[in-house]
Image (cartoon, rainbow, N blue to C red; front, side):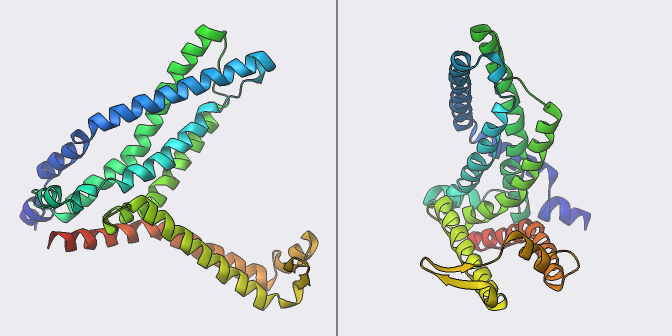
Length: 276
């Protein structure tokens, strides 16, 4: 069993080479992207402080300026990077080369996953922290003050929570990257929109059936004739509809956390099919 793990299913040395290849193969594009994003954040920070200095003075500078940029980098940038991570698989020449690389499907899965999920999240946090420090130094030299880092502990906690949420939601784009041969990012977004619209239609239909007495016809169409007090009395704690909703919340949470391993498993079989 140990020999099988070492030579077939998982080999630490072979996995290390695959992981190094993932990092080394895109370092130039990564450096260019980092320079572009970092420069854009620094320029945006300086321009915002210029406007603040003219309008309100140093007291008006927000302390969570860089956190919003971190969220954009983490989710939008991470989803795009993840969607492009398997483009070589479906290329005629590059695909054959990648699929014949020494390594099991499991090793290729873990290597890609570490780089695009946990690796990208931690890298984004470190990168934005460095960019923020450099930006604050430049702002202090130019204006005598900067945005600052108000309540740094709360911002770190928010960043860590966002990273955990990213690792789970990123799995959908991770699967889309290997599932769709062309335009994986756009096609994944399209299927998410279709699923969201379908879920909304089902939820509205269920509400229309079970709360039929609360719907009234107006000049603008159907609307729910319920105020806050009526909603609380109908769905509040201790009521049967409230218990049903609580049950649905638990099921939704379980499905949400199960989404990542399900997508990883589907990817595993999808890449296995591509190698045949």
